[in-house]
Image (spheres, rainbow, N blue to C red):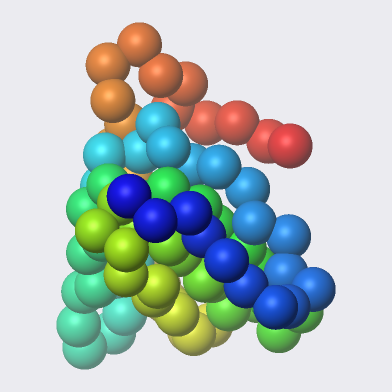
Length: 79
């Protein structure tokens, strides 16, 4: 797996314990399996790097954020 590289001031944090992350919008659902790194932009958008090497951008406006974690992993953490 390629290492995350970026030329930004974003502060990516590990979310490797998450199995799945789901953003629920009024008219659609976006699901990301095996997310690895998360950064939140100044406007609140989420940048997510997944284990398949895909970078996702989730704009502000979701109604709900859901996630599942791997066994023996904290369900909630605040850094």
